Image 1 (cartoon, helix red, strand yellow):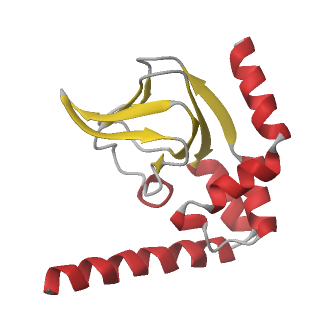
Image 2: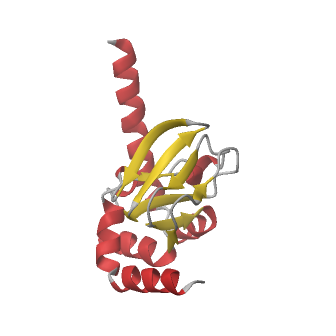
Length: 153
């Protein structure tokens, strides 16, 4: 682990309430209580990425959820730019459930720090507190209803 990575991790982990609050702003986790958010914050890891490093690679199996804590990353499919992600934005939430291959690359475009929750860490969390899944299912249902109502209109 590099010194920069250690410093970034120490900084964010020392600010655990801030990390828990940032996780709580993610729609899938917004229904979690403070105890659940703190458990998630202490279970995941903080990782730093240098500019032009791939955070995730298209076609690889999705093994985790990422929340951008600082910096900027781009979602790319080949040469096409699909989205730009900055502080508070996230990706990979569906990988916690389906573990399907990534549909695009996510590349850091400046020094970027992310909270990362692996599938294995998530599985341990929900084994200890199955109510976490209900919060996520509520958000999935909300999204499905929204998609259905927009396809009907």
